[in-house]
Image (tube, rainbow, N blue to C red; front, side):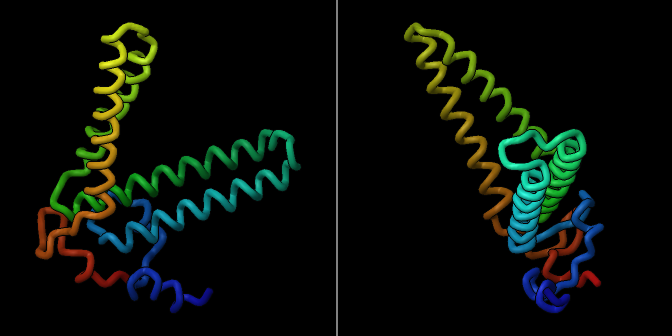
Length: 166
């Protein structure tokens, strides 16, 4: 793929790879979804390559495992950075991601332990925990993936559409 084609996919902007690792600044919805698709595609390709090198039905070995863990870490880092920059685009701190993720983990644990109870109260706790977990995750998904960013500059910088990255 030629650089011009890649640039047109990301809204006509030239994006440096180092920008993907930073937590500062703002990105729009399109750049977020392109980044998410790129991370997902890279994880799928690397997983397939590790599986092919290791052989079908066999463990990938120490090197394949290390490559997998490294790639997973890079993917989580880039995805988290993109999510934080999307929150910045809506005028929210990136710490909101940590708070909502923590709440989501607590609700998941609450739901897990409520499922262990066989009495009527345990069933209600399971329902409350599951609804809360789903609501928090949909709210995060909406804020990060679909909410329109601020049109004017905010405390995190100018809108991403007015920033030309060379």
